[in-house]
Length: 121
View 1 (tube, rainbow, N blue to C red):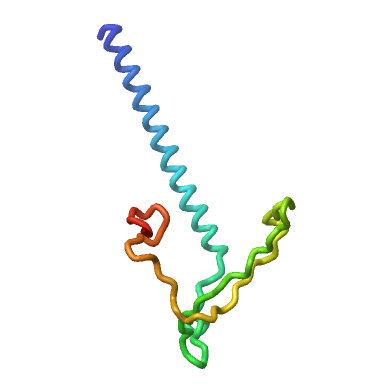
View 2: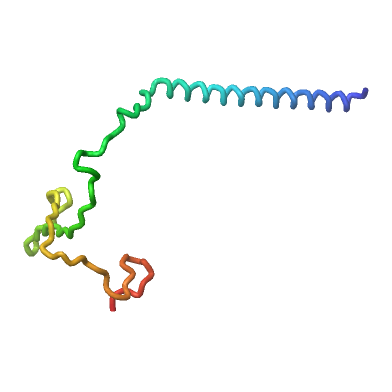
């Protein structure tokens, strides 16, 4: 054998050793991840039994209530006065509306800003 083929064999052997070490490290990393996941799962509380599951209330399922709501008026500032900041406003509660008519979008309107419709004319 000449020196060129020996150098090629040595480089090939080093590359094989390097790939083997990388494969073993990858397997160790995957095994460690599985081990840690099983430890975390072991510490979690057990799943609820069928008798511990939530039950419907005695009056039955809760039904949707549809109503129109009106928001409270935003306080007005005096002429030349400083505008209120969001932190100075209280919780803006809403109350049931007197009108039973549901608000509708204008005919030909998309119903949303930038929705691509023609908009109100």
